[in-house]
Image 1: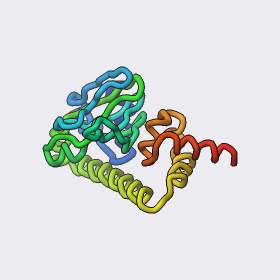
Image 2: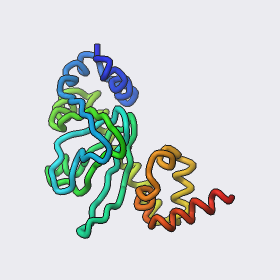
Image 3: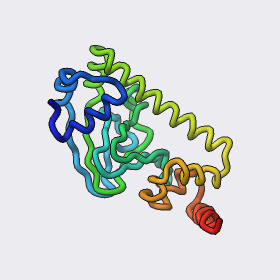
Image 4: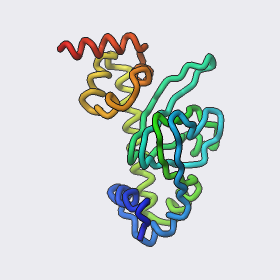
Length: 196
């Protein structure tokens, strides 16, 4: 039986792929619970990543950092989300982006090597890995389409309609870089949408 801390995560994972209690019991000891304050680093640009994270509470942002110190957000994660610096894990190279908390945050982290062991050992875990990869791919493709085809206002409206969590929980200056515009342009777009 999973501990109370992990029961919700176990259920969530079983919704993606049916994992037996025995399989879960085998991997559960490799999860580490970590707590962070606001604006704390989880992963940093230039350092190789070794772990996959599940967000229990709070929120994080994933962002690229330019040489002159400007950051550009490419994703936000909230309760229940699974995330990592996948290219760093897969290629064993330094991470191209950083992950920082946006508020007090609790994560479950597991080293990727333990996940791979389970991918190799159990078809249910291999299926879980495939579904996570597919979800990640769809998100990346939709974001690429949005940046190439849609206007900044269309991107904002889509967020408003499809992901209001971002609008209510992410500071406006972080949303601006996520949408690929400067904060003053986002402010104008928000004001024009309120008038409508």
